[in-house]
Length: 268
Image (cartoon, rainbow, N blue to C red):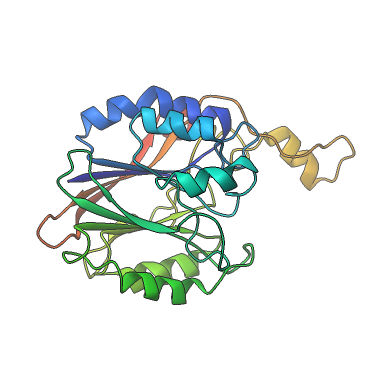
């Protein structure tokens, strides 16, 4: 089975490259399950709407994960209660709407795929202890017992926290993928216990930018110039950034992980 996991979809540029390229990528790489992080998919790069969510599912996305921007659009609070394919971080404060993990089926209905969405504690919005939450969920979703494959999206700011999560889940999950920083790291590998890992898989959007935001305005903000305005997304050609994970159906672990950087300025 082949998993395709794509980083934060950033604004209109990210949505366009996803819409244009995803259906073909599913065919080319024989993808059985698609996960994207959608928390930056709205036009302003903040949050996600019902219309965008439905668009993603129509083109082949199976699950949408998220992070600290999940509540930036008020409509998401109601949407996430009725749409179980849209996840929020599992360690958000107790009583938050929606769910942070769930079991789904592959496109051909042959396999159970567990997806866990977590958010780091360091330099992020207030959340419950992420490692305590990870331990609790991992006891409920065991490979070969409860699920055939298990994917963890760890949405976090610092590399050490993500790496610790990777090693915690090593042998317990098919893959642990970092999101949030919008820059792909070069540590794509399979850990000792058989879990595929990358500290951050980057974003899907215009890389001729500052993490997806207009570069000229971002520089003005750093320089504290008076004509700087609120951040807004760059609108050039987008790049798809993520990974393809080839799985072992016998033990649910990874056989191979391949970095995918497709189209746009980053790929060039």
